[in-house]
Amino acid sequence: MSSAPAPQSVIDLRSDTVTRPTPAMRRAMAEAEVGDDVYAEDPTVNRLQSRAAEIFGREAALFFPSGTMANLTAIKTWTHHGTEVICEAQAHIYLYEMAGISAIAGCMPNIVPAPGGVLTWDLIEPLIRPHIYYRAQTALIELENTHNMHGGTVYPPEIANDVCERAHAAGLPVHLDGARIFNASVALGRSVADLTRKFDSVMFCLSKGLGAPVGSMLVGSRDFIDKARITRKLLGGGMRQAGVLAAAGLIALEETPKILHCDHENARHLAEGLARIPGISIDPKKVVTNILIFDVQSTGRTAADLCGELAKKNVLCSPTGKFSIRMVTHYDVDRAAIDRALSLIGSALQR
Ligand code: TLP
Image (cartoon, rainbow, N blue to C red; front, side, top):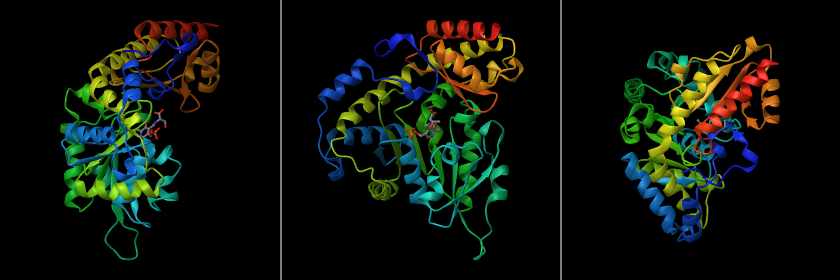
């Protein structure tokens, strides 16, 4: 299902956001029926939203230009200025969304580190503020599944369900950053509806491993989505003939989940190969989806130095710390390319 061959055979492992639309997506985009989506009159956007709601077993869904805007919209919809959002210390909303949580939603992030990025109720509960009028109040709990900066880790469903149930008992909503929830679904062999049913709102991305060129979705109750539509417009996310984008999104949603397992197999294969290279430290058993984060300190090289050298050999990856590197597999990198990357990494570290 790979798109056109990559130019000059670059092996781009920086992110699954680099996937290019497949020929089927491009055809669907060219042929899409469109209308003005600010009037809710784009039939293709409406079809994508209905289908997303159906797949997640929810009342409604809303199409966004990015995951960042969809997460921010959810946060803004659930909170007020001067309240707090509890999230994991390496959550994407905390580290990579331009501090929108405070700059725009006016909230204070209340963070806690969690092993594997998996927040349990024991870690969350002490962060909930008491109901005292002179204390900022907790308004929202946010989880991330799969957890990007912990190497694509997957929430055990019983832990996510437990957090949601106890949060609800404490009167708090829970938002899921499920940018890669389809990867979690494939890894666990459970449907996305099943994995997310207790969350109050869920964001997922069409533009990551699912391969659409643009777009993320927010799903939830009809009431929540009606409010989110207003917030999306406030943020400048009201789109017009967005059906050309939704058409690719529909194919991403229907077709790509069937082949995500290949990305996971390639990630495990890559991790096993990396673990055999002296100086690289990674536990391949912990690689369960399409993201790998590994340590290179014992190679005597920094992550930035090594990524720079690999880039010259047409293998692209990103430093995530002084000695850690992230690689992400996706449908534009096949098994042969993974093997080529491994041999180029091995030779870069031999000299
Ligand atoms: N993640 C990107 C970078 O921003 C790090 C990537 O390459 O992985 N939630 C999660 C868990 C994400 O990984 C991302 C993007 C987003 C939200 C934001 O999505 P976009 O890029 O569509 O705003």
